[in-house]
Image 1 (cartoon, rainbow, N blue to C red):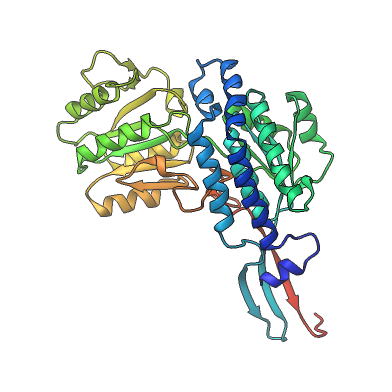
Image 2: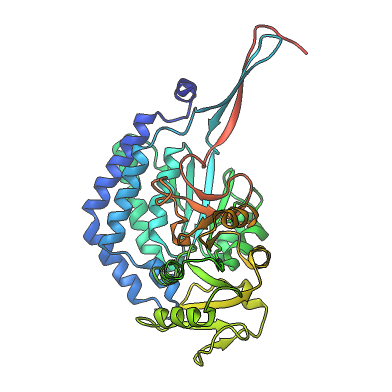
Length: 406
């Protein structure tokens, strides 16, 4: 069905899209030093006290390498447009086919994260969508430079720069645009904290796909391998606190052998190289340098910081209930050597990604083989989890007849 996509006016060919992406990878490499210098000035002017946003803001050689790899990986993927999803021959002879099609215009609103300017635009463009990018003021200069790179790549391929547009708007201007956009919008993706998501949902007049809220849980079952559990907790909490797939809450089975010693060992390991603030419910640990959980709201809170909470549960069913009540519906993990218990947990936990003996930090488009992601959706419509190339599409019905009437 690729011929349908190519034959449709306004739809770019597979080769046109890939040409732009390959040019973009080359242009980013050529601008590497300039991008790092622009971003260095932004980081100097930013309050490092907000560690999560600062981590997202910073651009270095590693992040630029990741940007280039993301663009090249998206270019290497098959065309997601014109893919046949379903076919049916009606008893009256009509041929009915359902085929993937672009959304149209996608708006993504995000805080900090210059790398989103690359990944989101690459995915949107390859899937045939126009994208409007609205980054945070703290990354304005970095984002504008990256969009300039996109425009160079588009122009060099003889295409309009309208495919990728940056909305250089203040908060009130953004609000006015959401209420009364000056162009058609088919989908809005807010990628950030609760305040941003609520702001967009309050003012938007088109479908909103919510992304970004984590508050991820890990449950240590009574039959867990405690060394595996310890290593995963440390990885999921400490490797990147600004990530929405970072770990915030750990539930310990009351029947775990030597559970108090295990918790104390994990707390000591977490604090070996970093000051981590630990919250616990009563009787969870003998460690004196912890804070008791006094407000239920803490269980709902996504930390995005060097903070973690521990609590005891009677069994896997209590763990499931607690996760479904408090988590952001993003990622959850169970550590156990019992495959049946793990299966029960994974089926019944209401999260976009569920893990057995693995870190929640893998919930990511790149780690899931997508190459890049526009966002990680915690919605159930139209897609859940990492939103990559294959997911940023709608669909369209093609019916061929020879005079049939109903």
